[in-house]
Image 1 (cartoon, rainbow, N blue to C red):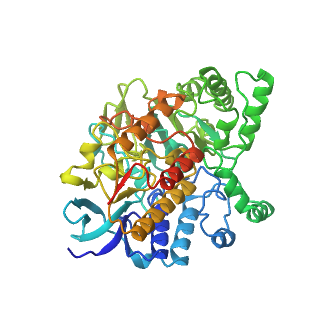
Image 2 (image 1 turned 180 degrees about the horizontal axis):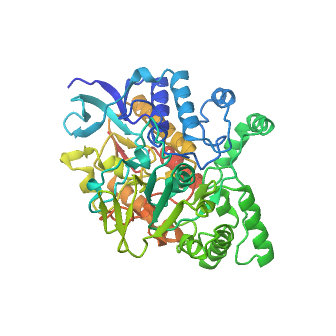
Image 3 (image 1 turned 90 degrees about the vertical axis):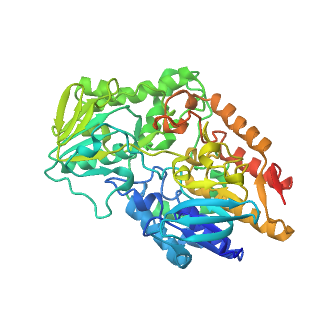
Length: 529
């Protein structure tokens, strides 16, 4: 059988770009297939108003090339989507990546040939490409979730999804707008849409916790300091659970005197960002400790939101941190605007979408535009939208019918020579994605080089190793409060999706140690042939 490429990589986001760069450096023939018209992945598609990263820009960046991190200049503490996309394009240009990327092409099927031990990859442009290996770089949050609300197709005005926003942008000036959802994309976009719209009606299914970003232009002196110590900062970050260089207070919240506890929460609040959850070490381990953080944030909501009933509706009922913590600019204050209305639909779902709006709680609402801020089919959605078939024609959809099963989030039994970058079972979304991506790419690239050096042509995760890893991921999740609520971490936002805590919650350092041990023991848990 004619081999077209050593490796086919699916996706040209940050994972796919770095995978291509590494494979080229090792001399492998590679082709990246990308559904979009450009690089950037998440940051190519998510162009909704206010879209920005919730990890500080100086840390949300590649670290494989010290020259790259020295030459690139971030302008804000939390980079906006346009700036991150500009960075992705700079990387593509700097390393001449585009010549090996096929854009505007969506992979529809990937089939393993048991006889010849190769993969055939098919696309929506009638391609049939044969490769020795396949690497999926599809991203954890890249399959937009469109809810099955009755009548959705009947709405006569424009409908937008935050995960697939028009590239030319949308101007809501003078428009009445309905927004469904109050997750991260809604929390970022609602304040900006409210500034434009004649009236904005927000339909809240689940109230979420959010911490102010306190975003600002980066101080040149701070940037110079970071660049002078980048290597040290990166090394230190890899020793911390989320792969982010921030101080963690190892004290217990409930064991800290109330006045001191309040002071520490306020200090984190004033600094802003995801570091709020590092105020104390047991916020995700102890119910009572977590409640102190909940109470602090709810008090802030009551202080900021003028209408008591609206403030009460905006106060989350779940544990803080069990859903992904959000980072905002002026979110709660937006509900003080006279042109913003909150409709809490947590106890009664939307009845139907109508041609002119929607009906909820027995009342009809009308608007010119509808925005679906309804998130993603996280972790597994993008993979399962491709018909992936392993040994014996078994589909990945069937293999994962009771929830995703992987070994280290990198590979799957029954699917030889197929690797997943930041797949379910890896730290991924619980960490700074860039260092997690780089760690996976480096592991895969080194693995392919080792196989070539030893003459092995097939690598496959062993069923027993896979089962043990899945059990380990689950048992660690069960020890934390994160597994106790309905979130996209467990697939709760997708009707019918198996409830399994999908990412590895044991932290980046422990995960890296395990991956290195697997290699040191001759790729323990894998069969090489």
